Image 1 (tube, one colour):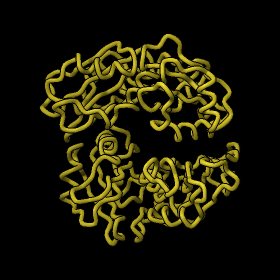
Image 2 (cartoon, rainbow, N blue to C red):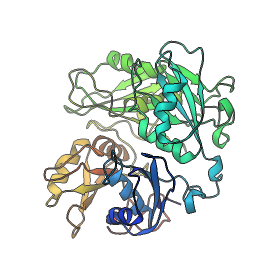
Image 3 (cartoon, rainbow, N blue to C red):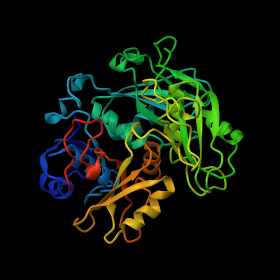
Image 4 (cartoon, rainbow, N blue to C red):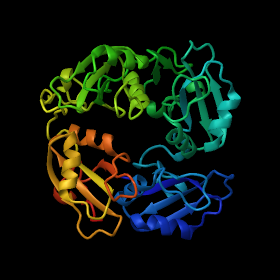
Amino acid sequence: MAGKKIFVGSLPPNIDDLTLRGEFAKYGQVEDIYIKPNCEPTRQWAFVTFATAEQAQFAKESCDRILTLPGATGPCDVMLAKNQGMFGQEPLGGGGPAASTAPKKIFVGSLPDGIQEAPLRAEFGKYGTIEEVFLKQGCESGRQWAFITYVTHEEANYACESTNGLIQFQGAARPCEVTLARNQGMFGQSPLGNEASQAHAAGGVRYADPGAGTTASPSVAAPRKCFVGSLPDWITEDMLRAEFSRFGEIVEVFIKQGCEPGRQWAFVTYASHAEAQLAKESCDRILTFPNWDRPCEVTLARNQGMFGQESLNGGGRSAPAPAKTGTVAGAAGDGPRKIFVGSLPDGVSENDLRAEFSRYGHVIDVFLKAGSHSGRHWSFVTFATPEQASQAKTATDRVLTFPGSLQPCEVMLAKNQGMFGQSPIGGGGAAQPAA
């Protein structure tokens, strides 16, 4: 079941129920608010529960690192709460482990050589109460990493959301990679969800969880290929290999030929899923090639075979080879092709939307919601393929600002994919309510 509850962090210390309701009621019907008592200064947080999952998602996309409440030192961090029961006891999805078994440990990579426990505690203590810091000894130069364990899962998740790809310690070559550790026991021996031991790749090698012995082989189905968009027109294989080999062993590079100017893309395939994931987390909207005007979009490719024919979800079905339009092709049924675009300005037109989003692929349909309140206009844009929709989302979410708008658009894959949003992804679900 999709989550209706959001976690709101970085609240001012004197926040009250009325203020939160007044702000978040803009995005839907607020059913419940829980404000955590006795938080330390600058660490106040709350849960806000909406009537529907769509309203919660809309609030998250509209407010995360954008909304600043009076008295706060910075914008709020807003995310879907992993645990959806009262005070967060019931895990999202139901039937899973209790909140006490939700992951509380994070992995921190790309630390500078010689870093000590004290600066890690000082920095990551901003996001919650730290129970333990494990700093790996004997790492090769440029490959230092650590585990940090919090008291609660919410604190660990808050730290990941706030620091991954953003925080850089003095002496480090690049920002840290911060993820929930897949193995949650002491020194990482106890795997999360009975999965194989996690390996974190950086600089061409794996960070194996200590105490886990040799790293288990990743699942055959785990994606090892990255899609890299917004590349410069003059990109070469050597340039891509030089940049992306920092994150692991590259098996293959495929550069799409014949792309239109400004729409060059490539596939980069790694030896392991962990390496591909690290490249994605480290580069997406961060890496900018010399003499180019925008950062790359880096995502895990939906189709993982040679030239993208083999579907990520398996089943033996092949997708066609890439189209010759400069966008990645995919079968129509492979995934969502419709995106939701929020925070549109008053007076935006269908032609405005088509002109902007056709840069990312063939736009089949535009549905512009009529009668929206001022400042809350939204639209559905449907593409010919899931890959085009995904690329549009990645390239424009909180980046694209239309003339007359006060803030960037929120762009996400629409939960419901039929005409006007009635048919939910995966079928069998309830229709998406009108905004």
